[in-house]
Length: 217
Image: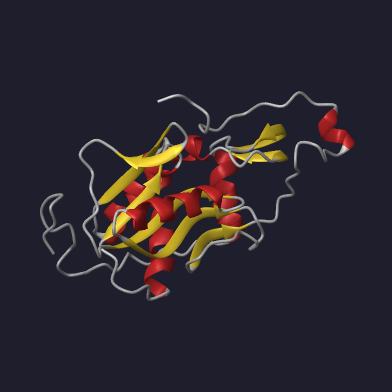
């Protein structure tokens, strides 16, 4: 497959199949622990909810070998799910940029990312999506699915078609509201709370906001 983004990216002997490398939930969480990326405290998530735990994917993905291991396992799950013929990865910045690129490398397709401009997802940097292009949405962590839904809407407003979503972590316990099939590498059920319904233990800890939403372009 040749694309407007460059040469054929697929290994001719593998097609879009990833090398089998299954990871258990404990294996995935150990990767986060070993990277110092499984944090405890009082955090404001990009969704606006508050939580006592935060998965800092940037710390996990800063090690290219660890990123390769995790994304290879996720790519394998996507392949096993037999998602129909996508040929482009789309991701929301900032959290989805590195994982989207590595998933594109594992699956042999190009990857682009959306950026928030005045609160709205847009393609920049010469990226484009041709009408009818089938896309796989890739994120690092999904909590409520809001960013994913916005990215799907932005993709389809440009004429693309998102056929499925994938993420390293589903921290909703399977409750994230997405309009397409969703394939997480690991599924966690970590409680999160609206700002006006915080438990006592969080009320007594200053909140920090480690994510990127709200940063000005």
